[in-house]
Image (cartoon, rainbow, N blue to C red; front, side):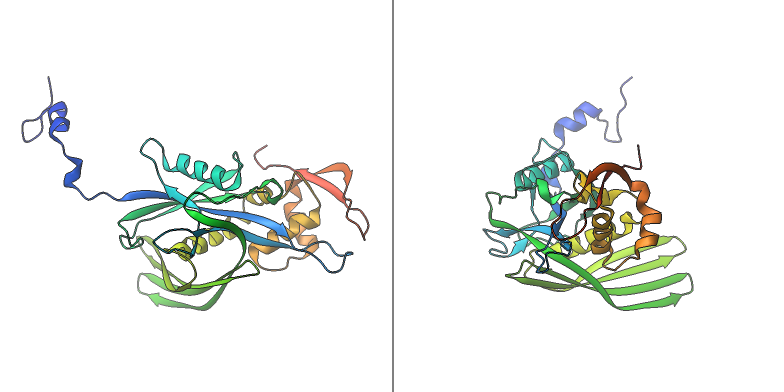
Length: 296
């Protein structure tokens, strides 16, 4: 027996007369926060090169936000998922695939794009800088790596009868030696008996398109949180590395210095010793290690 709805229609009849154009539908984009860790030049050849956390930005070649820096990304095609779109964009921008990728969040504010309602399904990728060959897409003038810094200020907590409200302002700074981009992001967390509500708000943004300052802030905070309880940081080191290099990765992500002994006690489980040694000029060779994933 066919099941009919309150209008007397079967599912086949309902679908035949259904008109998707009767409803407002957003476009969907996949935006990528691509992290890497790059070594900086050292004046003193006896010192190990210092690393910096970097993200990939593209300069937009068309409206809106022409000549403004933005995250790499693009619209999701009708025949692909958001993850497939993200992987496609990643391959187009970096020339590599099969790397660490995870979904961050869906940013869906109706006014986030001046053209129309565009929902952004954002993703975070971590890549070894030695494997990257970046290139700008068709709608971009150029693609470059920017050093990223995120620092908190003006943090406050207000208690409520059923919870609390915490407000933290973050200063996001991005630079590529030629340009400096800055933004201020306010993170508000409201805790009640029924759960936690989290809101990111752009207070100011200089040089970044759309709401990408918000997405970058979200990604950096996610990365900082996950390195403390997962092996995600291994995606930023080469196949063979020293323990000092591994510690540098953690320090640039967490934006603080770590004591050598406690770090090695906690994170030595991520490294498997090899019989090879580093060949850096100017100082004693160090033992090389390779990745030892926690899931193995």
